[in-house]
Image 1 (cartoon, one colour):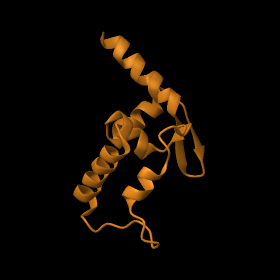
Image 2 (cartoon, one colour):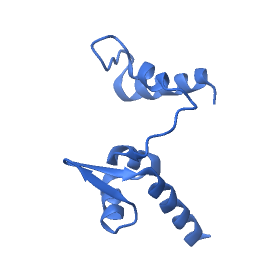
Image 3 (cartoon, rainbow, N blue to C red):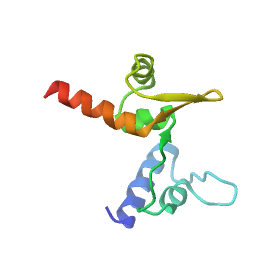
Image 4 (tube, helix red, strand yellow):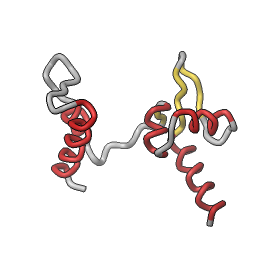
Amino acid sequence: MNQFSLKTKIKQHVSLTYGDGFVARKDGHSVVDDACASSPTEEPPITVGVEEACRLLSIGRTSFYRIMDAGEVAFFHRGRRRLIVRQSLIEYVRRQTSEKG
């Protein structure tokens, strides 16, 4: 996906979620600008928060907390946050697809 179509998709999502005039920061940069600022060759983060993990798996928070509590994915606490190891999410999906197939 090229940068233009990615920015268009993000704009559509932001518009549907927050309305057309949504600006995330006081300096005038929008969520779209922030989301498109990183280079496509940049490494993804090693850990993600619960919300991002839920989004990546397309499941709700309650379901994801059950997965974490069952020890299906690796996570650790940093203050009050739970940070989930991205690789464990990938391994979880592989296990789920291999069990079904």
